[in-house]
Image (cartoon, rainbow, N blue to C red; front, side, top):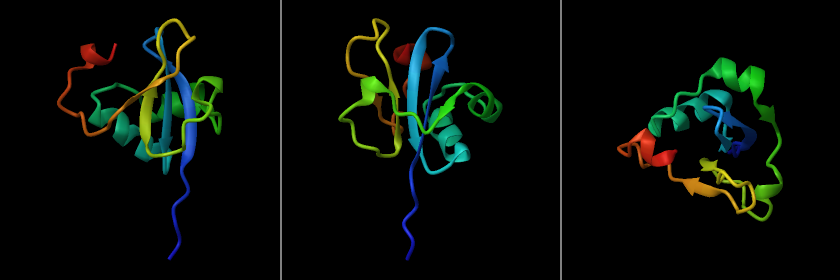
Length: 94
């Protein structure tokens, strides 16, 4: 049985926050964003996001399926947003 390999992307969200995502594919990443009520599109990931880059703020954080949002001051470690929080309001993430 083959294990699926996780892939990494990072990019800006709504011009204010930096987001990191670890998923099995771009479509899987979109699913994670939609579960969190974040409006990120496949075109955005393909055009504007960096593939394969985990980022210095993610140093020491293991690669596991999920979404992380970087604090505004860019000095603290990113905080993980659990994809199962689908019922949370987008305003709580910002």
